[in-house]
Amino acid sequence: MTLDIFLQQLYDSSLAATIRENTSAFPWLESLHVLAITLVFGTICIVDLRLLGYASHRRGARQLIAELLPYTWLAFAGAVITGALLFTSNAVAYAANAQFQWKMIAIVAAGINMGIFHMTAHRRIVEWDDALPPPMAARLAGASSLLLWVLVIFFGRWIGFTLSIF
Image (cartoon, rainbow, N blue to C red; front, side):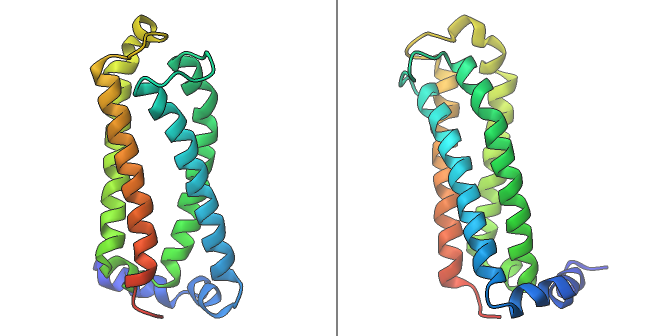
């Protein structure tokens, strides 16, 4: 099965038709998606600003990460679920949309950035937890993360202005 056939089958599914044809399904999904992305970005932003060296209510980086990570993952799961449903509603057009493709690339890059941070600077967090400024590796991870998530939001918003109508 080719990707084009798979995307067309998604588009032709009863779930996609329900989302497209129900006057409130798409707006509700989009609103929940935006809310989830807002929570993802908000929690990540707090941690990234701490990694850049901005103190956070007398909490070390390790405590901040431990407290916020569960909320970040929960919000990310919500964003993935609602985003997948939105995608299904017009899979062929989304897959061909350059802004959607760039958004997906930015999300993957943000994940890679997080993985690198956790395999490098985070492993030594006990050494620099309360230090200001944090080590360069942590600051680079924080700055990269902020940039990538801003790009995710930027491209996500841009999709609505460039997507072919149903």
